[in-house]
Image (cartoon, rainbow, N blue to C red; front, side):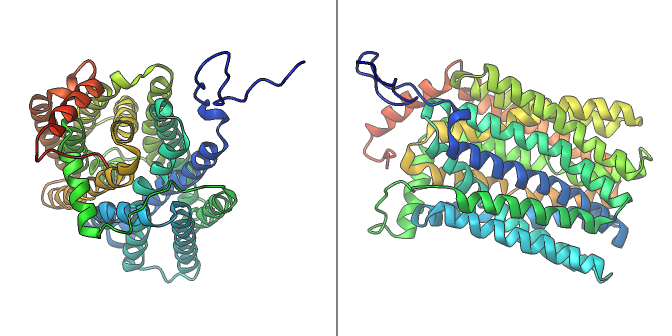
Amino acid sequence: MNSDPPAAGESNPLSGPPRPVSIIRNPQFLRLWAIGGFTSTMMWLDMLVIALLTLDLTGSPFLVSLTFFLRFTPMLMGFGIGIIADRLNRKHLMVFGLGVQMVVAASLATLLLADAIQFWHLAVGSFLSGTILASEFPVRRTMIGEVVDPDRVGRAISLESGTSAASRILGPVVGGTFFVTIGPEGGFLFGVVLYGIALWIALAMRYQPPQADLRKQGVFQQIAEGVRYIRGSRLMVGTLVVTLLMNVFGFPYVSQQPVVARDDLMVNDVLVGALQSIEGLGAFIGAALIVAYARPRHYARIYLYGSLLFLVAIIIFSRSDLYWVSFVTVFVGGFGMASFAAMQSAIMIYAASPAMRARVMGSVAMFIGLGPIGQLNIGVLASLLDPRTAIFLTGTAGLVTLLAAAVVFPILRSRDPMETDRAQRAFQRQRPDGPRDA
């Protein structure tokens, strides 16, 4: 008698344990992936349009950096959002966030159409969008870790990162084109459409949150448990240190990139957007290579060396006087950006136990939230000196401190950091005061 073969991921008594389901055949992952693609496209478009609008309204490089500061400051709440995400349905939090982003985009478009836009509107919009961005790691990316097989987490996050990179190709080009043709209001109206599609996909998604009984734990007990858990892993601590350094010294350059392109490289707003897009293309190709070839034992080295490559690229960018030299430099830097962005989440999700993932990812968001310090710093330097010098000084500081971190955390250079981390955790558990898995 014939029978149908078991579906992917199901057990077959003749062939042993189930095989992991391919991420491209996982409908839950595909929905989360699509939502990330739409929201990422709008994030990059929004960041460029708000930067250019601020420059037009105020003429101040510092206030341009201030909008980035306001966007990323809410990330400091990431750990707290991770605890909330452990207690509530993550799908409901994601739906709420998409609704807020849709309202923000519609409000800014309306103010522009009424010719009533002021800088403080852009500042408030940046802060509200940043508050929702702060939930990205403990909510949607944690959901990705829940719906894919553990051995596929790295590929899933790399694919997610590649999509974000692809959206960086599209978002700035669309934003720059809207800015010089229809007007900036066109970019925000486009955002209403994108957020609306993402909201529809989220509402249609079937998601069953994992069973977790946290009712007997207080909030402060959960925080202490999460801190103790992360502290017991040199790999996680090292990853968070690199996250902090990159967000304080590396990524703030993005706020000054449009200023340098306009004022020093002397190009129009379409080419300003193209400069950000080519960095996205480099990141997309880098993420595709990671999806194809990276394995868990490679994650930490990809993360470290990619971060170093990015910092070297922005230092070279700060010294360039030619648009096409800058164009090639940021393209190469995109490979480093992809390595950082993909591996940052993959390392933390892969190394954490399922019960701790939301808090672990919340800690990533919180360390990203310290990055606005760098935005203020580069804004002040750009005002006192000039944007190119500000990028050079912060990038150099980032390179020096990251090389120091590579020495302090040799696990980031280890051939098999995941196995080394497990061995360290096993040793810690033998100590009376060691960390405990949830």
